[in-house]
Structures are given as structure tokens and as C-alpha cells.
Image 1: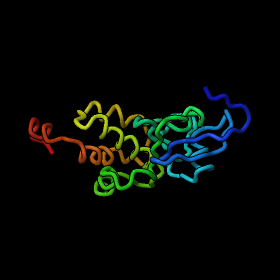
Image 2: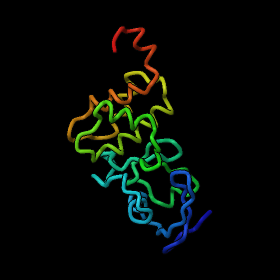
Image 3: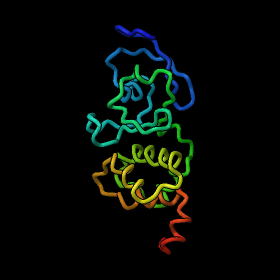
Length: 164
């Protein structure tokens, strides 16, 4: 078990690369990503877990980085919006106008990317449950929902309901 008191050099796996940083036990992952690693895609919003603007993936699951200590991420795979590398959800957001001001977009991209990987056949309720974890003050919810539906395997849904 790693014991950390004061500043300690730790290694984090971020976007597929091991990165050495100096961290204190009280450092929040959001601030470490932004200040130590220069990855500014995760946005500081409420900084108490309500808005989701800081959402990243940790071991493929969406996590609000403002609620996670940096040291808790040791040994885990961290994926930020900068590491998506042209994931289908990015193009889907563009094609479906899934953003307005853009502040919440990176958090929603991460939630939707994770949803598409973990629940590729997600039903309406699952999509709604996942999307409620993030807030958009510009109200792009319909466009964001259309973006995620456009990349999920909705063929069965369309066949059953006749809707598109």
C-alpha cells in the first residue's frame, strides 16, 4: 500500500499513457488533470458533483473528477475527452447539434461514450438514467439524446416501434 504524506511522485495512466506527477493526499483529480497534466477538457463547474462538467472515465465508468482524489486513481485507467480520438460519439454530437455553449459538452461526451460501450443496446430508460447525471444549462438535452441514440444499436427499437 502506498503511503502518501506531503507531496509524492505518483504515476497515473491517463489516455493510455503513464504520467508521473507530484501529488498531495488532498489533491482533487480534476485539478490534477487540468493543472499538472494540462488536460483542460474536464471543466470545473459546481465542484461538488452536481453538474457533471468534469466527467471523465475511470476504468471505463463515468466519474465526476471533482469528487475523486488524485491518489484514488493510482492503478486505474483514466480517459479524458482529449483521449477519445475521434470516437463515434464525437461525430454524433456534431451531426445532431448536441451542444450549444459547449461548457458541458466534454462531460456529456464522456457519459455517452461510456454508455455506448457498457450498454450498446440501451433502452430508453437506461439512456435517460445515464443522461440525468449531467446538466446542460443551454438545454441541448434532445440533441444530446439524439446523438447517443444515433450510435447505439437501435435497429431493434425502430423495428418494434416503427419510430425513427
